[in-house]
Image (spheres, helix red, strand yellow):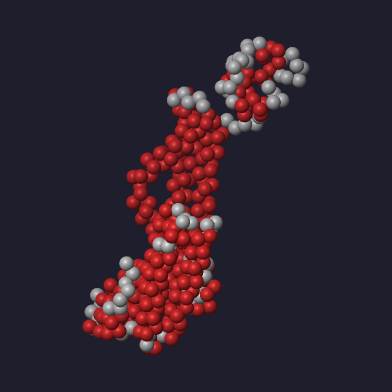
Length: 406
């Protein structure tokens, strides 16, 4: 029992058919190197006693120690959140702090009550299986945390909202101008829209591992390119919200008719550009699945999508380089026609029997849905450019072009 205590403990207390026997202690004391205190755990002479004794000599932890370790792990996980949120937005740091306070306060209170809780589990509830007891304890911790903090959620939310002011302003231009100067505010909104468009292009291309094609063309925020895809998308959504709010405040500042028309066009441009990012955001799972697929058809579809993304955004970036006054109707019309025809051609290819026979029903559905998301994203970019770059008459004519993706 002593020399093989780890084996005895691992096998478990309920697997031995033979009982330990009441004379075990007497026989064991015959050995001169064994003291009576060494046999304290075996005095009951039961299999449970043998299991507990083996656990003692196997250096196995008791339930009490296990519950203490479980409480410690609650604190340990909070530090991972702090590390993950260190360079993130203020809201992420607030979540990390809230998680820490939530766990730390709960752990302190339960640590003080640890012995009574162990008594509740083992003596009052009579849970004898240590594993089940530990599971019950962990559930008890979680339920206690909810009961403890639920009445104070509003107070805690108010406290956290005042912590970690944003040091990085998502908006680059509109946050620096007064709304009282309408012309200056609209000019800032124009510049912010261009910046926003660059962010979305960079995000969409980075989703396909193509950020190298735009890094030198990116005049945007210096930290944006270093963000993860998820953080880039969150940044874009935050900026979209700020820009939308700025537009509404600008319209409330009593601008002239001409200014109102321009702001409304920029609102439409911003909305369509955001749609383009959302389409790719919604397709992230499909993109990753195709990129990592061992199926040649799916991987080939991914590489073809990469080529389409590069071919689409190259003229878009060139248009943005030339500026708004260069006249872009023909270029936009050409890109739009290529987009609608490309969508139809790809759909025709997907419905060929040679493709369908090499992928499952679910996979062909994935490819069809992804194709729509990709080309709808292209279309949204073009409609955003239409409202940003074209005159009102050109934009109206552009909207009448045939081939709308359905």
